[in-house]
Structure formats: structure tokens, C-alpha cells
Length: 264
Image (tube, rainbow, N blue to C red; front, side, top):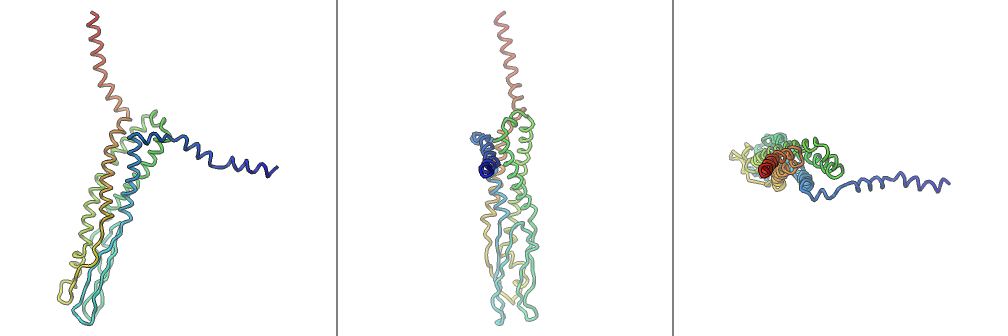
């Protein structure tokens, strides 16, 4: 008896029916509407934004050749990346004298504030859009019947629109400063050994900023997506219905007055 009952019990406890009921309750047609489709785009581009910025790493460098025959050419390679606290990045500057061999130097600048704000905003956008999609697809009746949800969604959408504009502009300016602080010419300008006659300095590895440039582009795309979605979210709020009722009210009253005059 126990052998025949065990398969039935395991099948009852299987999570497959619960997953099937959850998937059946999703209204996938909502993704064909602008409100749901734009949310999917916001979710994707939020990943692109904080992923491209948070995963960036690059390197810069220089070549130092001492005039002394006893010393060879020294190659300097400096690695840097997110969160762009360049003042904590160390590298060794060779010295062209017999007393010491090198000196510890640091890059200049701290650009972590705009970078971390940009990544944090992308993560919050990712989680909010994911929660909003679950609400749109699974609990659509709750979203339409309770007028507080559209109002909250509209206020949050306007807030994210403003924050994305600020974050994209701030990170764009911060990235420009990062490029200026990490170019090889800035590295050689900061080394005292390059200003004397004992050594000859030349540019080394130039950092590739393609992924960082894409992050700024993704930031402005997120701004346009959230700004465009404000109108579609506003149409779900009671404010949009009140505006239409007020616009239709005078016309109905005027039509009723004209009808009364014609009867007289």
C-alpha cells in the first residue's frame, strides 16, 4: 500500500501545478500595450546601464627611458575601473638615480560619486520595473480598480525621469574627467622624472573607453524611456479622467440648452 500511495503524494506536493497556475494568471497581452512594452524596455536598459558602468575596467601607461646606460626602459601600466576612486590607484614611478629605484605615485581625482549614483539608480530602476511588470501582468484588476496604484506609479515614474536625467548628465561629466585624468599625457605630466633631463618619457597604453561611453548612452536612453512613459502612466490615473469629464461637461450642458430652446 505504501508503495502505491507514495507516487500520488509526491505528485501532489510537486510545485509544477503551482507554477502552471501562476503562468496561466499572467496576462501576456499587456506586453503588447505601450504601458507594458515600455516597462520591458526600461527593465532591459536599466541592466545595460548599471552593467556597462559597474563592470568597466581599463588601463593606462607610459614609458620611461633613463639616460643612464645602466638602466633600461621602464614600462608603467596602471589599472583602474569602477568606482573610479583614482586617488587610491597606485603605480611605481622609476627614478633615474643610483640612490633609489622607484617612488610610489597615485592617479589624481575621485569620480566615485557620479558613477555610484548612476549604478545605484540603475539597480533601483531594475527592481521597480520588475515589480511593476508583475503587477501589470498578474494583478491587473488590482491596478485598475485601486486608483492609488496608478497615482503612485505616476509619481515614481516622474521621479525616475528626473533622476535619470541628472545621473546621465553627471556621469557624462564625470567620465570626461576620468578620461582627462587617465590619458597617458596626464600620467607623464604628473611624474617628476619626466620633467628633468635625466629621462625621456613617452605615452604607453591608451585606455579604451568604449564600454564607459555606452553606459552614458544607456543613461540618456533610460531618461527618454521614463519620460515617454509618463504620459501612458498618467492616462491610468484619475487625474486624466477628471480632465476629460471637465472637458465634456460644458459641451453636454450647452447641447441640453440648445435642445430646450428648440422645443420652445
